[in-house]
Amino acid sequence: AQSVAQPEDQVNVAEGNPLTVKCTYSVSGNPYLFWYVQYPNRGLQFLLKYITGDNLVKGSYGFEAEFNKSQTSFHLKKPSALVSDSALYFCAVRDIDTNAGKSTFGDGTTLTVKP
Amino acid sequence: GAGVSQSPSNKVTEKGKDVELRCDPISGHTALYWYRQSLGQGLEFLIYFQGNSAPDKSGLPSDRFSAERTGGSVSTLTIQRTQQEDSAVYLCASSNRQGSYEQYFGPGTRLTVT
Image 1 (cartoon, rainbow over the protein chains, first blue to last red):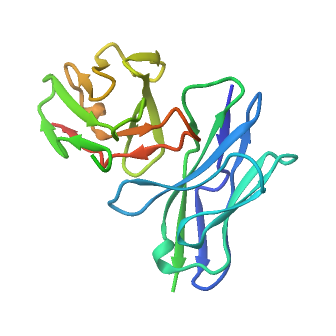
Image 2: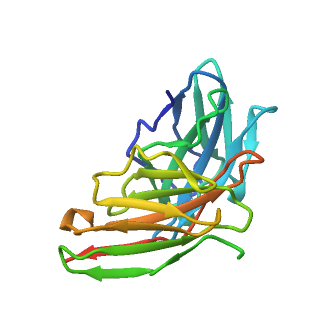
């Protein structure tokens, strides 16, 4: 079985400050990990992914995420938040060893960046 | 096409009527997924296709919901005898089996049952 948890429903940060959106996962085998973003009144967009290799992955819009196998985490980070980063963020996991046909999504975290 | 397309973009229907929602995935993507999202909340998985077969139908809420995919491309999600609780945004996504499986989402169909 595979599952993902986003422990914070809401994250508030001030513009220019670093931001972190947390994600932890559970899989039987090895994970593929993803972050998606949904801007207001827009569709879901793929942001970044961890497949293998370097634990720090970089994605669109200056976002990055760090894969931590021992802590089973994949937190999303950005060094300096922008008001335009305000959106709903989803973490997702896929267990590559069980050949599961789908990814499991977290419940989402609403990020609000205040000027 | 360049992206996943869905039609209609909006659908208002009366309680008890049947509706069909269409998804056209990215060309060449073998996997196709349907989700439901209520009021900007989380994604509720409905069904997954690999080619024309559906290995995982576990998310379909009731037997009023069905989906099919033909020619390994277009998929249709059908809701029979719609209820007000079916009101939501229905999202379709596709992904490439050969690769790292990130999903590309369509714009969604907003269904309102009155």
